[in-house]
Image (cartoon, rainbow, N blue to C red; front, side, top):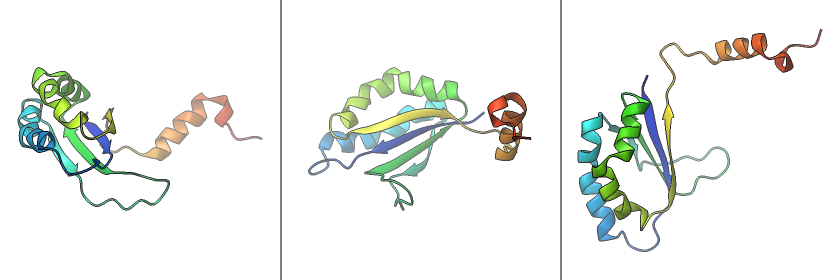
Length: 121
């Protein structure tokens, strides 16, 4: 099942550091061995609920194992400080839904398994 790296990166303070540019120049080569590919990389954000300071990065991997191996790889550990020293943010790795996922099926399973979700008679 596909997995994703989702990062919410806050806008850097001041001009873009040379370290950040070096990070951007090198990051793709750290993703390639793990099948990582950018789906979103700093595009426009239209906030509809709550607040969302900064930009969004979304990277797809073949599996959660691939995403974890990328994040823990020596190549990525080597360049990560180039970004984190200048841009704060939040980053998660998350497994995706399988094909044919239907939220109504999730609701039905919860209703069947959890008494708190049963309708009152």
